[in-house]
Length: 171
Image (cartoon, rainbow, N blue to C red):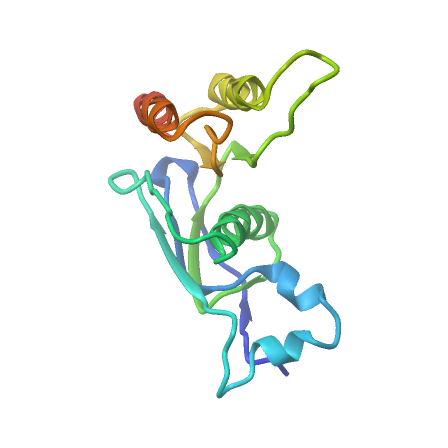
């Protein structure tokens, strides 16, 4: 009806550490009601399918772009499709190879905890450190603006340190 194929992904062992998706879209778009079909009109495609190639050699990605342009939706798509595919559910993609993961960890922007005397940056770092403690080389880790609660220079430095930590872990 809306021109997006649902497939069962090819599941692979966790040792392969691959997530390869072709023309994947966010599954939640199918649950938005009647207007969903308008998102996929042939001549006015407003939802752009994405490709993902995550392998042991290519496992860290920086996604940049203007606000409200789909970066967080993309990150949520990858996490949700991993969960659905690993659970044996069909996913909205042209093709997919999904290695089993032992953890699917996501981080999205935190809130201030004014009553607890904790600022945004402290909350962000606590959440990321918790992920770092739990993640293994066979985990999927997706961070969305993990250092938002600080200035650009400090945030860039902290983000690079996080990338190094997760890179050393191998996930």
